[in-house]
Length: 637
Image 1 (tube, rainbow, N blue to C red):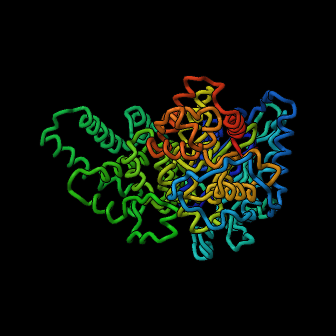
Image 2: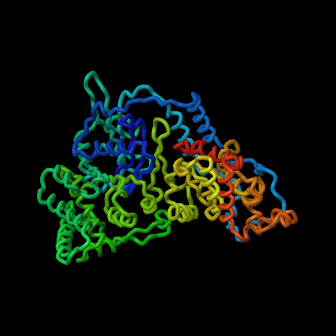
Image 3: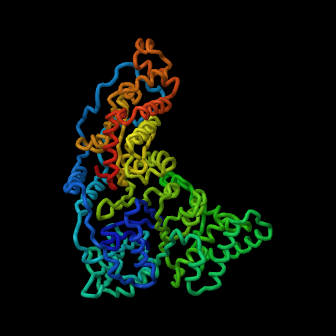
């Protein structure tokens, strides 16, 4: 069985959070204040101590009221969420022109990237997105200040991994009658722990609940001890990724094991510091490494606990799209571990196994247990390439894994549907995940290439600015800087969408609670892009998500907004020649001589010299709206 979900109420820094987990790996991302420490501490208290936990008064959440700039801020936020949740799936056509377009020849290169055929069509919201918006509304209604927290509660839901597993497993049948059959045909166990003050005492109570939330009359203590034994939590913090002397000294028992791990750690440190490692030292290191790998790669009695048996199945299309960054194969890892030479895989595997040894403490782990492995910010110790090698080892361990990270490389190596983005705007924490029904195979392919492989760090942003090309990226970044705005520090990232299409990006952003704003040219393609945004966000919210330039393209816009002299100079034309030529021809010659990005930089140079007032009002207004979007941890405008 595996831990399917956890719901926390009034525990330490979390007022409310509900998060689901995959049976394999689940990766949690979010900003610093979402409650990571409280969630992981709750899991460790429930399953990591080897006994049924007892809460203390200090574990109870303390309500603190936030001060808002406007008394109506929360009410307006709820109204916005309601508007979005009630949006219909169809829209009437709308003229999206932002102003009069410049007449004349089109100056876009003929090789303008192709767009989707259906970009001009209005897109009905999919069922997962409709449910997402309704859930957002329900969440926002509850995310208000309450001046008391009378109790704390932690609810854990365990589920069988496949149909019929409970019926055919004697060990799992020992948990009856806690198993409850769900409407989907899978058996689940609901364990609830609550804590509350009673006089001078703080009371802890544990219950097993049925599918309707009613208390089951059963041997609760016996069953809970079995659950803890079957699913022990092993928590590897960043500081524990490599064993250290202090941790080894504090760990009771197994003195020989501690000495071996400590000696090996010291040996690695000596190798790292030494500029001249001789053959004798290498031989000694090799002997130690081989000895430790034989011992600790069978940490809990069998090598199957470290690496799965059998061959790793070939990556199919679905696997490639869901996990675009491939890892080292199981066959390669096994070959490296059996090698008689020193290699990074063997070192990483031994360090991982020894870290597990440290994390188990005094507990005796059942060889048949299926531990829940928590890894916190493991990228802090590794170079990116070494991090992926380490993850290759960890990924092949057949246990449930819960990972927190700020590494774009790591989240590219895990399935998209295993990602959880956690956001805390005011009091409660919201968990976002991508529903498998939300994206088709073509969407996944585009997202895999344009986001997960090439721009993985955009998944950590609060808001995306979706633009057509490189020119807009240069301009918006530097215009913001001239206005005293750091987009990166505000959690804003820019993404080119012309090759990817808007639909996949808007679906992905909304699924993960990321806001988005679209800037398009005023040409025919830009009008189609605008229709796509309209179909997704609706007419009432369109102005908060879209700017269509009132000119054919960004070059014509800048030419008409105070920077004609920059284009004339770039084209190498004198005043008399400029008077005899149409602006289209001047822009075309300037592009031919300097390229679009080169012209953008020339405009920015002039803008820097002229000051804040030279930034076009349209861009000032757009950046102001983007900052409002970025202030929300959730994608509510």
